[in-house]
Image (cartoon, rainbow, N blue to C red):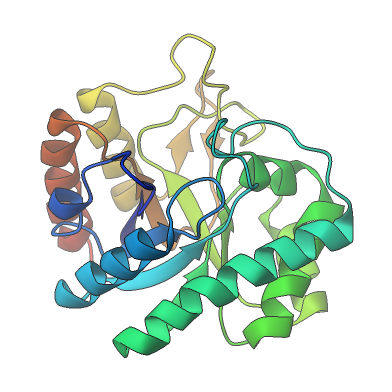
Length: 245
């Protein structure tokens, strides 16, 4: 299991996240592609930072919505989603090529990610975009009890998958993430470490009602936008590495 974090979401004079500190502790960096966050200068710098720290680079395309940080529902047609993901993936891949590092995967951001997990039409559009760019590049999606269905859909479109779980988010019994506006949606430091440890050791996540959620997991997502979160990420890296085969 590898640790991943969203990065490169600053743009212009606006600074978001603590990329310099976080990059030292993760295996994989999901780098914004200029739509929900990021700009060409930030993209280039963040890729270079990943290279220095030997971190795998992933494209993090999202809805073109800087004001809403890609977290608002936007009703795009399937072809619009496909071309939007293809465009953003290609942009980040250009910076990867210039830096001499491969693009390792694609992980959609925010509302695009949430929508594709609930709507197979949107998920298929994402798969089509990535397959048309490079079928060898995997797509990172949320691991849920429906993972076999999602695997079948990926197989139909000729793309590989990386299964993702979340250390800092609470889960509902159906395997979806608890909505951020509900109480208990975000774990405190103790809860983050506990959820990650159970997942690494016992291979399941406990939902909000105690249901055991079991599915394959390749990557564990964390968020690093505060000083305290850096210490948590460092602890998670040590924990994840201790369970490596």
